[in-house]
Image: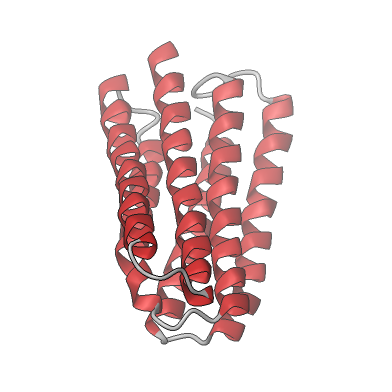
Length: 196
């Protein structure tokens, strides 16, 4: 296994996890919206740097732990997770939704999904069933985020549609996109592991 590829993927996932924890700190009030927005730019830049490193390494690698296409897909999906978390933080800064704590359960699942993806990446050298099990855990977390989105939309639409409700809807939609990207990343790593 090319340890440089593994390090680049792990670096991407670490930046993504940091972005998710920053979003959690923002909704709890531990970090202000403006400060979170500023810090997220730095985190996203670090994630992009690791992605660029992975792409450069892929171009010259003779052997990869899973197919190049699956590694590229995995990296792109991780990038999508971080980009959508960045958008969540930015939109939270812009929309100023009052009850931010409502997003905590969705972000809990996001963090669980990212942790499962990181475990899957670290287990790439292990057997296919181990990697597939890790990927399944990530896929479950992504699915949980999408189900929570459906319940949140039902809650929002069950009462008067105000500007606050529309802002909440945009933010839960952003987290639903994160859940979809987690599922896509899980599929990429599971597909790659099965082809070995």
